[in-house]
Amino acid sequence: MSIRPVNRVAWLVAMIAGLGGSSTACSKEPSAASPASAAQNTQTFRFAPPDGTNFVRTDKRRREMGIVGAPLRRVDDEELTWHIAVEQHGDQYHVKQDLVHISDKRDGRIVAEGRPPEGISAELVIDHDGNLLEVRGLDKAAQVLRSLVAPGEEADAAPLITPDFLSDVVAMRYRVLFGETIGKGATPGSTWTITNPPGSVIASRTVTVMGDEACDGTTCARLHVDFNLDPREVAGAASDMLKARVSAAGGDASKVNVKTASYGMKGSMLVEPATMLNHGAQLDEGGTVTLTDPDGQSVTVEVKGTTELTYSYPSAPAAEHPAGGAKSRVATQ
Picture 1 (tube, rainbow, N blue to C red):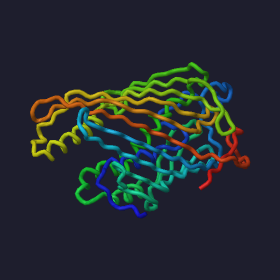
Picture 2 (picture 1 turned 60 degrees about the horizontal axis):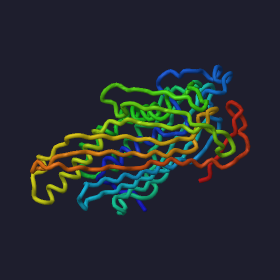
Picture 3 (picture 1 turned 60 degrees about the vertical axis):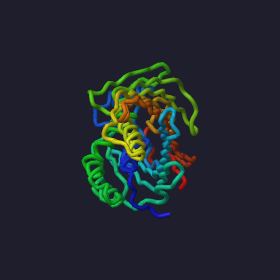
Picture 4 (picture 1 turned 45 degrees about the vertical axis):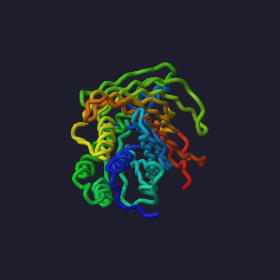
């Protein structure tokens, strides 16, 4: 099925965020340990993805939102499939990510489904310490994303689909998920907390190494992650839901106000400490938003959701020049 313009700017944001979601953990901030020092201490997370690694990553997200005590509920399901390839050029890694399939549904109704136009891709250039140096191909990606915006939505979407904004989102995703992990202790019980400046999408996050377990023929560390999120985004979505209900009943939607909001996300991820390749993640989110309607009555909106990342790493012969002696993996299409 072909992809047509859609009216949900959030759908475009999901694709933008996916551009920064390769399996490798990178950051624009200096890493805490170089590969040389990490090699001497195998109990730390190090950046060393094998040259020639190819795999498929699938991002699945479901968010449910409903007004407590009212038969009004909305369910959004998004699924993005990416093909990712890692190549080593000298002392740098080039990570190419291409969006190959999308599915977007609201309350079971298909909003978009199929193979997207070519060009929603990014090539990340990363140094041997795992620092993100450059993101290429975003001019083309922004052009393609702009072509998917439905008439009337251009003003809302325009700030989200510039090359500079895409680059910021890519860097943020690395920092949020894995950036500060490089050089941290990989032994069970290791834990760290990162607090961001006021106004950040993620106020803070705490990571704890729960233990080691087998994954795709190698050893992974299971990380528990706990995010304290800025509730403004979910507050806005809850406000829009109540405003739509008020308008449908002939009321004045401008008199809907947000009183309080809370929102968090936590879950687990499987990561190879020796390479920083991922093998899966499961995150649960939830929160409540309290609003007042035009009559001054209190209304509560509950939000819950799940995000699942899966990776296809079929067995394959070792790469000709694997990095750090790790095994190469080639994903089936």
